[in-house]
Length: 61
Image (spheres, rainbow, N blue to C red):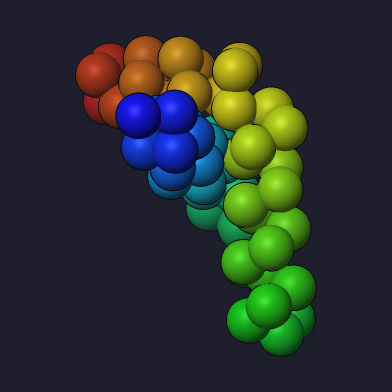
């Protein structure tokens, strides 16, 4: 059960990072660099990015 919650948190953090920090940004680099950077930032800052991304999505801005 803990593994499923961790996976859901990682996915939500990755999505939230794209919606908040990297929204409307053009990023250039290797696939591994882009993916891992966004994943790590999403995991570390997910506790704040996920609620902000949900609010941003629900308000439509």
